[in-house]
Length: 215
Image 1 (cartoon, rainbow, N blue to C red):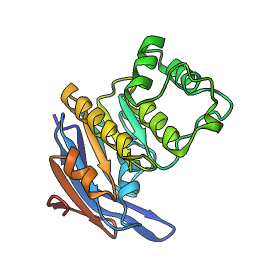
Image 2: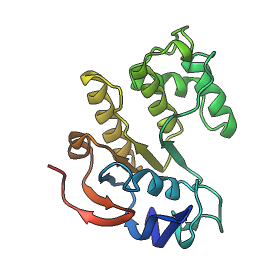
Image 3: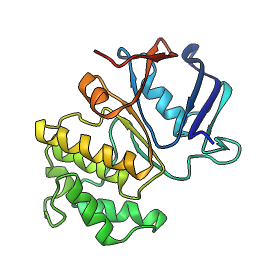
Image 4: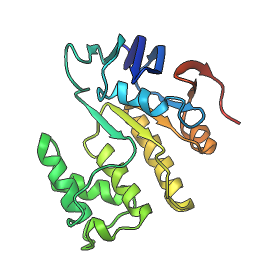
């Protein structure tokens, strides 16, 4: 069974075709890199796989379930697309604890361990509002991986991170891949894709094609 299958997926918004007959098959347990110019459709493609938009034509299935028919969203998914909404007056730990309470699948110790993995202190009393941009990005990555999802979708995962933070994220994503997660990454940083991904796709004007490792 493929992790993700898209069949002639087309999305038209306000008369503009943002995804143009996309066909895609992704195997489980691999890390896939997506690249292309701004506005080419990478984020929209990720929204489609996450069930955040619905097709004008075609379909997408995740682990055998057709989104919009068998389920609304993938049942085991971690996600970063654009800005992640956190509560500004709560600490990082408190934010993750509230998010984890929705599914109630992990413990407080799991949350603490995840914060440590992304380089944050679980006992930091600063609220999210006082976080630096790099700390906010680390927390976003933590919420995406803390429940050990089968599918992880990351749009620009190393944004605002310093060199040490970038290396930490690369290592974390490799660990998640080794765990068996299927990972989709879009990044303008070519080194991100080179370091983490084994297969590549290029997007241009809503169309998708198999690509080479970006140079």
